Length: 185
Image 1 (cartoon, one colour):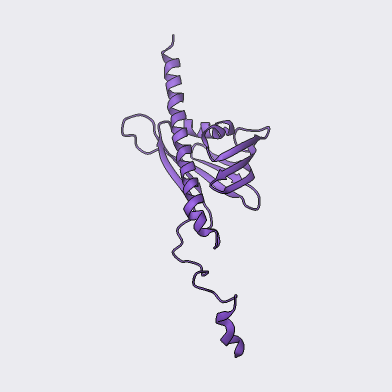
Image 2 (cartoon, rainbow, N blue to C red):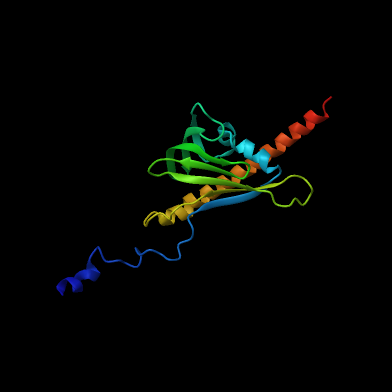
């Protein structure tokens, strides 16, 4: 009986501030953008780790393996997002042409990033592909949860938004180069 009376003062007792919050927002990092290219063009571009290296700003370093294109391509990368610095091997583990690419970040602190491509109706008659980058995550535990949402999650979202802006610019540049080549006798 004494044990039950002391339970509220025990460090094992669940303090309201330590309890799991049922209103915790999603930890998933997800960004979408319409890109001016066909799904096939975007898919082919994203299969190349050399291209990914040039458009993803939050990966501070890439150490490429021998294979850098298509399923099985791999590298060692270092993510630099706010105060999160994580070095992980990454592998292009799935490529379902032309609609899905999975990047597996391996290891104890690893995660999966899914790139989905859909072809919405074009409003101007030109090709367009909606590209979504999604990294599903579990919310981190207290006490780092607040920092994750206030800093890491915000910066990760910005990184993916910039990645998609860079992809759209690369696709516009490719189409301009193809247009110039087609006009050259």
